[in-house]
Structure formats: C-alpha cells, structure tokens
Length: 149
Image 1: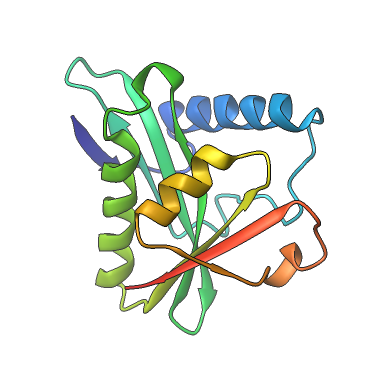
Image 2: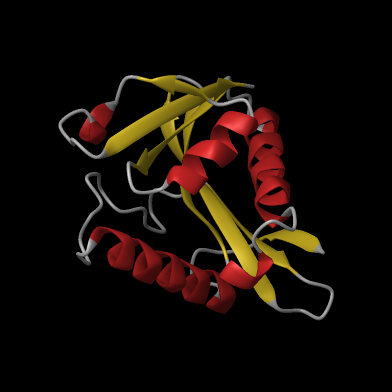
C-alpha cells in the first residue's frame, strides 16, 4: 500500500469523496448533513489517497488550515471492503506528518453522533474530545476532537 498526496481534482480523490458523502447521507438520512462549509480545492491545504498494491484507491483524507498552527481533518474515508486493514491509520499518519512539516501544532476534526466507528478510531489514535468549534458549535449532532502534534 502507498499513500500519495494528490490534487483535489484527482479522479480517485473525487470518487472517494463522493462515496464518503453518499455513505454519510445514508447514515443521516439527508444529502446535506454537514454543519460547516464543505471543503473545496480553494481551502484544502493537502489531500491524500491510499492505494493498494494493485493501484486501487481505497481511502482518503485531507486537511484544512484553520490558522494559528491548527488544521482540520476533512473527508477521511476508507472503502468498506478495506476497513480494519490499517488504511485509515496510514492516511491519518500521512496527514499528521504533513501538518508537522508545515509547523502546525495540532489537528482537530468534527464527526457526527451517528459515526461511532469514527469516534472509536480517533480516540484510539490519541484525539481527545473538545467543545464543538466554529460552524459546529450550533450543531446538535457534532462531536469534535483535537490532538496536539
């Protein structure tokens, strides 16, 4: 497996983000469950895709700069068939390494209350609960986490 930094408009990145959004829409019963501003090419500092040895794209994740040395993890996703295989951990490590290289001091994220699997993953990875921040402060479904780098 390899983790590659790719452009926002990379075909595999676009496809993985579409699959992530479809899964979230199914979990929450609405295509528009995101309380914040959706990430875009303009505000995504880095985006990574995980590739199996056969070249298939199986996971992704990105970073948005929030300022003051803080980044936000966006669009973390692993294809269902690859879950539990370490793909998410490898993508997260790539995001954290990239953020450290930029001199960022911490990463934060928002996930929803219907994503217990994400909560378990992030807490296992050293992320601690924090009060909802920014656009998530008014969302009753948002769970936020942060980890110093």
